[in-house]
Amino acid sequence: MDDFRDWLGEHWGLLALGVTAAALGLWWWQGRPLAQPAGMLAPEEPLQATAEPADPWTFRNHRLTPLARFELRARILGVERYRFDRPAELSPVDFALGWGPMSDSRLLQEIRVTQRDRWFFWSAAHLPVSPEVIMQHAANMHLIPANASVERRLLAARPGQLVMLRGQLVRADGQDGWHWISSLTRTDTGDGSCEVVWVETVGIADR
Picture 1 (tube, rainbow, N blue to C red):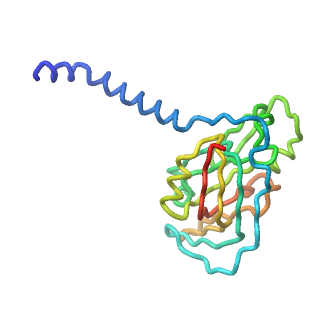
Picture 2 (picture 1 turned 180 degrees about the vertical axis):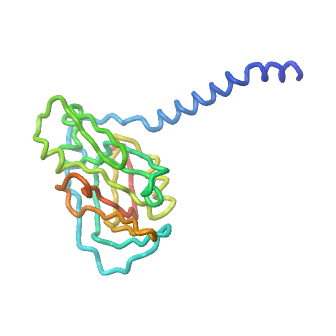
Picture 3 (picture 1 turned 120 degrees about the vertical axis):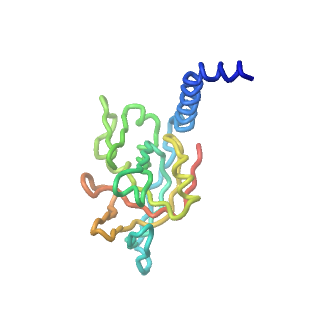
C-alpha cells in the first residue's frame, strides 16, 4: 500500500493531465460538427405570426414581453455558449441557423461560419450564390430556454444537426434599465438583427 501511495504521489501530475486531456477529448467529440449529405435539409422558411394578446411575464428577474409567435426548422451552423456576459442571465447559448440554401452542404462547404460576442459571421473565398441569399437564409438567434429540460437539449446540440424550435420572439427588460429586443424580420442585418427567442419546445435530430 505504501508503494502504491508513493507511486501515486510521483505520478499524480501525469494522472491529472491525462484526466484533463480525456475530458477535453470527450467535450470535443460530443460537440464535433455532424457531416450531412448534399441537399436542402430544412427547405421551409421560418413561421412567424402576431402574438396572441398576453401579459408580460417575469423570468430570472427580467420582464419578457411577447412580440410574435415563432417556429422554425433549421440546420445548426454554429453553437456558442455564454456564461459571463449580461444576456447570459437569460440566454446561455446562441445558435447560428440556416434554412433553405443555407441548409445545403453543397453551399456550406464554401462558407466559413464563426460566432463571437453574440454575433454571427461568415466568409467565403468563392460564392456560388449572392450574399443576399446567405443573409436571408441564416441568422444568429439568442435562445432563452423556458425550462431546464429545454436548456439541457439546447446545450447538448452541435453543428450539423437539425433543430425544431417553437416559442415566441420577445423583448426583455431588466430591472437596471437594460433591454434586449428581438428582430421581427429575417432580412435585416447589423445591430438588432438577431432574434431573441423564448424557446418553449425544442427537438434536435441528426436528420
